[in-house]
Image 1 (cartoon, helix red, strand yellow):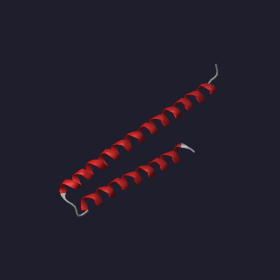
Image 2: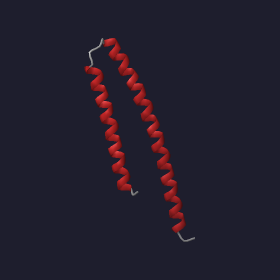
Image 3: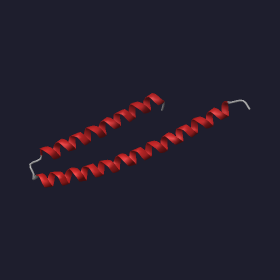
Amino acid sequence: MDSVDERQALSFVSGLVLGAVIGAGVAILTAPQPGRKTRKRIRKVARRARGETANRLDELATELKFRVDETVSAARDRLPG
């Protein structure tokens, strides 16, 4: 998979997650329930989203480190010396 395909896949997944978060937010805000319960649900969703985002960023950082190490290793193999 080349870099363009990876960026397109990441963009798609990012858009999908953002759409889900926005949709969930709209659903929570338009649901007929008391304000206190709505605020509680918003906090719960926000905590979950923050955790999922942190996990995804950790995964991306690990993948990026792997790719950089792989690229550096390949460059060293190609250099004369």
